[in-house]
Length: 434
Image (tube, rainbow, N blue to C red; front, side):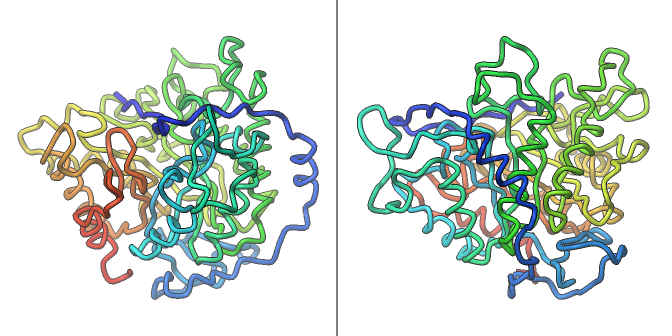
């Protein structure tokens, strides 16, 4: 079984922006292949204590080795990450700007000890031409706190945000969250005409369009030293399979492994300095893996053991998502030995691949007490952090910063106060590396 993920909520005054094609701008950037200056890993105090050189002498930029992440200078980075949404929903800009400043948000994340941000976006972010304005029926934004954004298109806002995060020394992982700002679509393409209305231009969205848009952002922000990776697609699910093996799904268009390899090649051709984050899938139902294991979307990497990704090993990061009972009540949460019983599941789903591969948790979190499952979610999050510590897997992105995320809340509560209990848990995970 898998967990139903959600679309982040809108401010009551928000409306949907109407996207339009800006293909000429996209083509111009994609064909300007000069790139920027080489990333220099200038995170300083963000780095770990060990150094290494890539196994392949031709490797450029950030790299992974023996389960660890390294900057272009060979300095280990401990990823103390936080997820930030907004560019992926109809607001098409950072969340909570009706009462916060966008620069203030980045600064607060840094002050809390985070050194990396996983930022979600969608094709609408790149093609929407409706500027941010206030007024009746418009998206509300505090103009005093966000004066630089007024009148800007979503892509122009993303440009400002990326530059500011880099200036503040925050590593950035860009994630193409969905093919649409309207919903979390299960596949990286839209071929059903009944769903074309979900796409920014009301047309089909192909695998090639997806790779084009990933390559676009890879190249556009290549000059920013702290832009270190792209997460190819968020939580592919439903009919998606890792690869062949399920007699009920034999069309290779739905095979995540092959699609991820295709997109990875496009990203690395556009910007060879980046890391490639690949999420897991749901069950492959191939008679080899344990498909009966309770799993979240993006959590299952079992087929990687016998159908591995053809992505350069020093560029590949496996990035599972896993959640506790506040988000999805797995059958394993009802066991008499919960949460101790979960260790074997986590090992099977993704832990077995560390340290052969870098494994960076792309999402985990929950209300941590005040949610529907109460203390059971506290027990789950505590157990998961202890599991990561025991495995030596301290790299992760917590979900999430803003409070208005269904099923999890955020690092901030509804009054924008910092959840000190959540921060204490993350500081435990970060340990001496913070």
